[in-house]
Image (cartoon, rainbow, N blue to C red; front, side, top):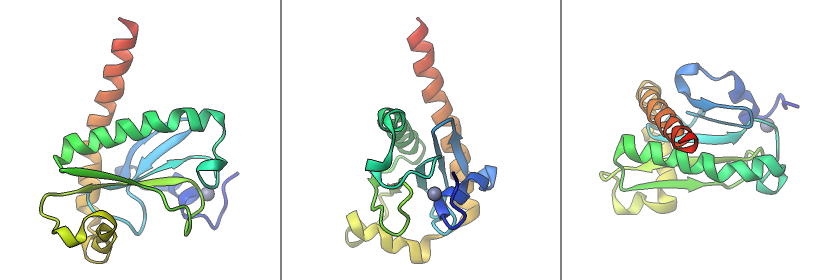
Length: 151
Ligand SMILES: [Zn+2]
């Protein structure tokens, strides 16, 4: 049941240009307010709170989606690190921030410091352009595995 006050639920209606993928249980998009190029929210489509609020099928498929999304972001950005973060505090609806940390990011802004890039790093057109590239690579990764599975 979507929660009208929930930012993560509201992402069901996000601009399609911001989307990497959407399937039955999971979606990944550039999140409203977090439009740093290379940052995506991987979110449960259902309003499930915290990792421990996921049901059996969501729990079983989270790793696959995280792996494929991080792989696609790595391939597209060439970033030396791609972070996977989940705080579950401000927005309890389960989601993880997948964030490319580029080689140009100075040491003091790496790790948890990366969040400081939010203040100056938002650029919606650039974030959506990158989302389009990540979408194509993500789809290739998924197709490649499905193809391998039927061989
Ligand atoms: Zn929600």
